[in-house]
Image (spheres, rainbow, N blue to C red):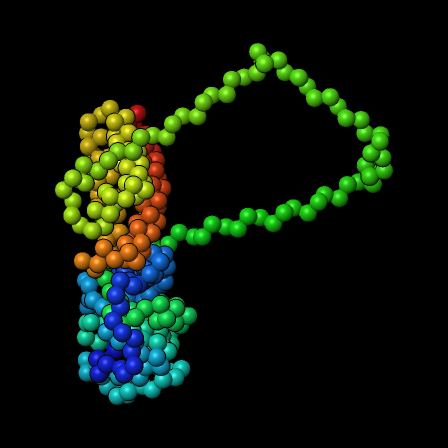
Length: 328
């Protein structure tokens, strides 16, 4: 639902400096919130319905409104003359209880009184969220928080948290006949002695595959790419993914199959860097700030660890496709 622009609210939080950031994927229909600590959370959103233009690119949160009043735009009232000029806060307000106005005219991230519409193409151009989700995002962001809207996927739903270990299994109830045997009646059996000469040799663990360095590190200047090249832990994760790809390609004998697989992996890498640019984005010139750098490193670590798993899955899929096509 579009939100009409109105004067800035008094008493809003000051401009954000190197704090949280928001990325919205139209393909995923999800909002990704990167906190100041680098942790990323994602939430479903409703986006503009078919035929409604949706802004794409960079913006910021211009103001925060609690219990907002909804004022339909002139275009909305032309399409539906029965709309009132204003809807006050309450259960019938299409903006819900919280709204974050963006730099585009009449575009906001807000709640909704139609929660079933979230996750669908149903809005008038704004980004609708479930009531509990917009409350979380509202509390975690400030005026000035950067917002980036992209058409492509940023990875779909975020990875699930590891499941908690299962509760200890209760002690087994022994049958009465077993309970009746006194401890003194159970004679310990001598341990079997295996001559050293007959014991199987334990093979030494294989060293992990060597990572492959990014050849572009000598000239790259983009802050996030530079950070991957300069931070050893990030370089190792990136190099492991590159190494897995190169070893896979080196094992393909047929030149045409190798070229096709290489093209697919290159496209995957480009999409990965687009996702990273949106999720881990930092304002140019702030990469020297310790808090900003720490948040970016944390975000990149999570993204690169996930990329390792994605590369392994992609290679497995390419292998299956080659076998179906009759390739070795």
